[in-house]
Amino acid sequence: MNKITRILLSLTVLLGLFFLPTLGVAKDDQTVKDEETATEGETSKEEETSKEEEKPEDKDTQEEEKPKEDEKPKEDNPQGEKPEEDKPKEEKPKEEKPKEVKKPKKKVKKKNPQKMVYLTFDDGPNQYTPKILDTLKKKKVKATFFMIEGNIKRNPKTVNRMVKEGHYPALHSVTHDKYKLYMGSPLNVMREMEKTRKTLKSVSKFDSKLTRVPYGSKPYMNKSFRDPLAQKGYKMWDWNIDTLDWKYERSNPNQILTNVKAGLKGKKGPFIILFHDRKGTAEKLPEIIDYLKKNGYTIEAYNPKEHVMMNFWKDKRL
Ligand SMILES: [Zn+2]
Image 1 (cartoon, protein in one colour):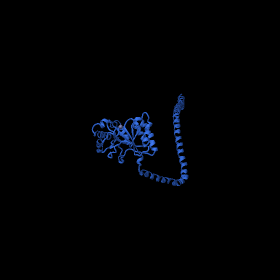
Image 2 (cartoon, rainbow, N blue to C red):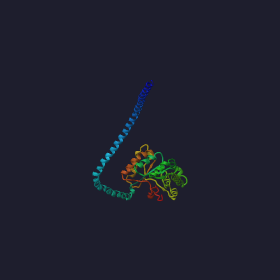
Image 3 (cartoon, protein in one colour):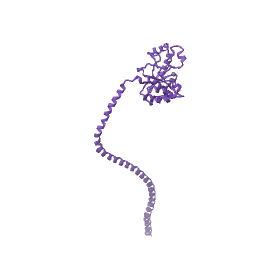
Image 4 (cartoon, protein in one colour):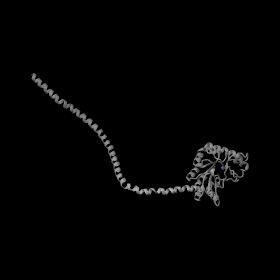
């Protein structure tokens, strides 16, 4: 009996040793398969993305490298020979250099005073001045502005733009009132110009000594009024062409150009044309500048170094 039990026990042990590992392996295979399918999904995506990323990189590098290889022979063969042919072509700029030398010769040419025109704008700066400045900038023309002290204070940006863009800022009194200017002390005009000058200087740092007295210097600016101005070193400009733009700028702006044409006709310059910072004037200005340019006039801003005497009294001090 002992032998039988021993045999049975050994059989059960053998059976146990045979079946138990197979059951355990079967479980492991399922979990491994599940894990594999899960990781395969991820890895396959990663592989796809990595393949997609790699593929264009390969294409790029291949495409980049290929043209480099294609260009190099092109550069070596035909362009290596052409530069020798191009070298004589590069000598052409040398022919252009004399043209650049000719330009200063034009500058050296003396200005014809008979064709000189000074555009002058009174009573600003105001809301119409920027449009005038825009036109002057577009047409590459410089002008002279006779400004009222209060308007300088009210429009400092316009004043500074004016100065920055090469125009000449000038003085046109504080009150613009003929009674206050001409009916009291003969010093009044000079005093108002002094105040305007100081305000302009504080706003723009520009020290201007050019004046235009309101309503022009005749009849009010007799010698007693002119003397203080001259003694302080001021200059006084009137005009020789009056556009009467203040009168026509709304009703008939064409008349402004007509008056310019009539003022020039049969006369010799230099011409000082009187305008005002007005709406109709600003709108008509491009046409007026075009007309002057087409007819050979030279337009410039006032230049104290080349002062032109232009006052109704023909006072050489001013
Ligand atoms: Zn005025």
